[in-house]
Image 1: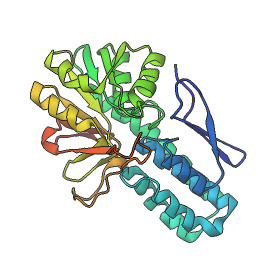
Image 2: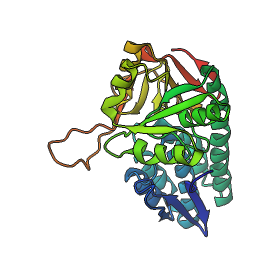
Image 3: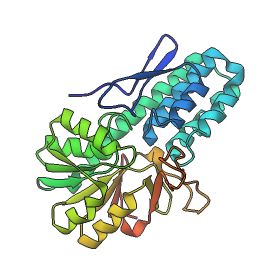
Image 4: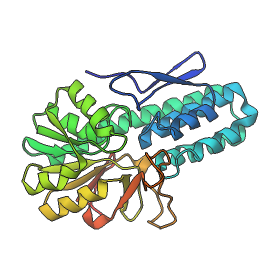
Length: 308
């Protein structure tokens, strides 16, 4: 059983599911140009590296309809909306020749649909490739949300879990809360419930304890950027999982589409986003952390398995 669609296009308007209020409410926010889409991305209405790229592609289509003379400005607004997630930048660089040529709205729509369809096919391939890590019913720990609202159905890390469960290879899933936006407690738990997969939501600080107790057989997480030398940028807290997994002998597997791969090696110049809507001025809140390749058991993409 699938939940509400992540977005839909109607009458030259993009209706984007507000992930901040799921699962209590299903609300769609409207956008009619690139600038409005960029605001939705910045405000975390839509999140998940692949989904941001898809929605941005539709934002260019909307801009070409509304005011094609501001296409380059709209492109820049989208590019600056989220600096760490590389899918957004890869998609926009792919679209740049269309922007520079000021092609027709129909061509922008065709491009956006291509990006959407490509991500769906990629996720299905990731799910299939990830099955090789499941040789018996396993207890899985995932993190944040990597399902149909962050990517395209069936998801990346959550897609692997879905496919494995349907083959009788998932016994139980632990979904850490993922403070402070609680994507795990709200979104991943909701998707697992819709799918009928047995799960528990657990506080983030329970993760090492669960592994020490032998309650986790494998950790499968997503990524927002993977550099060419195997550094994984993902929701902050991922590094803690990788460290605990290494200590207690739990395979730590990363699932991501090729659009998440950065062709460049790791550098400290890569911007790590900070959130500025923290509860108080005394909070220091980074959105992502960096897991070095020596802590990664394997990376799964639609192209196969990579062991950094």
